[in-house]
Each structure stands twice: as C-alpha cells, then as structure tokens.
Length: 149
Image (cartoon, rainbow, N blue to C red; front, side, top):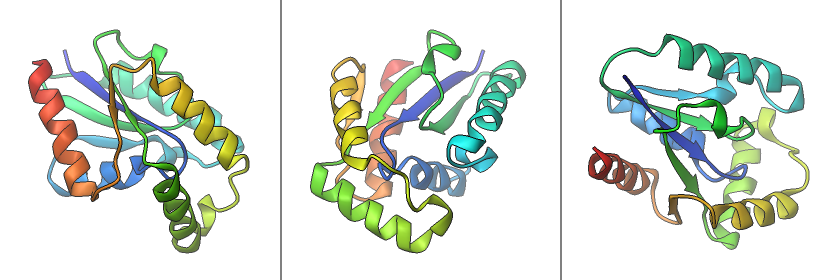
C-alpha cells in the first residue's frame, strides 16, 4: 500500500513549492491547491484528496501538499509533516508569494493562522522549521521518510 506524506502548514509555509520541487525530481507529488483556491475551492480540494486516497496504489509514496484538508481522512500510517518557518520568514514569503501569485493574495488572518499552526505543531510527529531553501527542506522530508521505512 502506498504511503502518504502530508505537508501541512500555514499559507506561505512552502507546501506548494516543495510539491513542485518533488515533481521536478520525478517524485509522486500532489498539491491539493491545484484543485481550487480559497474557501470556494475547499469542496474541490476535499474531493481531490478523497479520490487520491481511493485510487493510490503501489508500494511508493505520494507527497501531498495541503492546507485545509483534515489529515485524519488519510490512512493512519501517513507521515504528517508540519512546515513552519520562523515568523519573519513566513511574513516575507507571504509578501513574495502575493506579488508572484495574485490568485493566492489576500488570505486573511495571517497572524491568527500562524499562531494556530504554531500551537498545532506541538502535536505533530515531525516539524520542519523550513527557513532554508526548498531543496534543503525536501531533503529533510526525504530523509524523514527514509527513516520511517
């Protein structure tokens, strides 16, 4: 059975970027935001996650970048990884992301979301304080996955 590697974190944490880097390296990766943005796209992202779970076969793993899908819908053996940059890096990334990706601009409650994810991170099996490059963060993820096998 395939393993799911769930990348969770606040907006601007690097989930989509890591997913893209993984795909560039030939890894199986899905960014659920590709199925809809903002609150209007939640249903489409939920359906995409459910379909992914149902259809995933094989012995490999799939990296799933997700922000607002409950990780509990995935199998219990899924790796749950919180991406949580430092607060200053988080704000800088949001500013850059909003300039480059207008469809993601305007996500409200940045400070509240960051605080919620910081609190939630205390319950995670693995937290990556990704203040470095996407490549370095992906390497940390792959090392973690390798150690779980």
